[in-house]
Amino acid sequence: MERMSIGAEGRKVGGKSATRKLRRAGLIPAVVYGKDMEPLAVQISSREWTKLSRHLKRNAILDLLLAGEGGGTKVVMVKEIQKAFPSDELLHIDFLNVSMERTIEVETPIHLVGEAKGLKLGGIIEQHLRTVKADCLPTQIPEAISVDVSALSIGDSFHVSDISLPGVRLLEGAEVAIVTVLQPAGEERPAAEAEEGAEKKAE
View 1: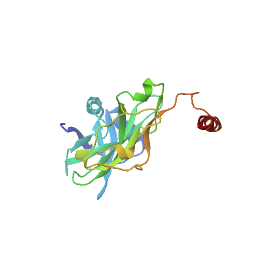
View 2: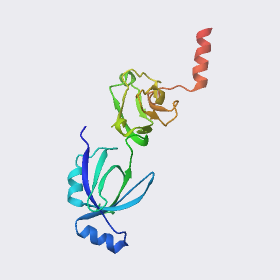
View 3: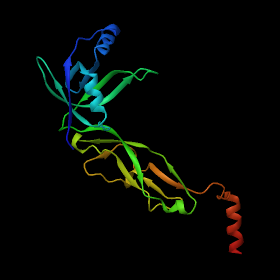
View 4: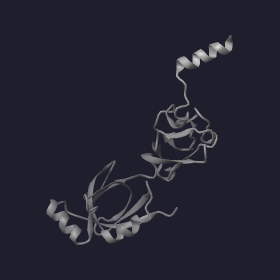
């Protein structure tokens, strides 16, 4: 996938009035931080960001093109976007500087695919994890993790240990269930009743 880029300029860190002036001028205050570097205050075009964000996917890698003296390119990820409430005005962006040769921790969404066998028997799907933390190189960040639930019957679960992604280390416990097919409500007999029924069959 082609890597997207956005222009940026260095800025002087000021108070709230300075950042309000930036936003009135159509600029968004931002900061770039990361390992082995001092935080760098920058500003980007609001119009340019709006165009880019329409196509920006989760955990995307961007080239931040720094203009002016000491400029260059920073390889970054978006870590946090601050917005005003209730206007939803964009206030500030945090960019994380990354190295393409060093692993990074990300949070990846989990998508369920297929129809579980247990659903046809009246079972209920319960998804315990919607995202999972992973450690990998920026070039190997999964856009999403697909979990095929087709083979799951009532009482079955799909665990973190069932995921296999070469080059990606999942940081959640291997025994953690991602999704379970539950018994239909009201059909599960109390333990004492089930035990009594088993004894009668034995007789």
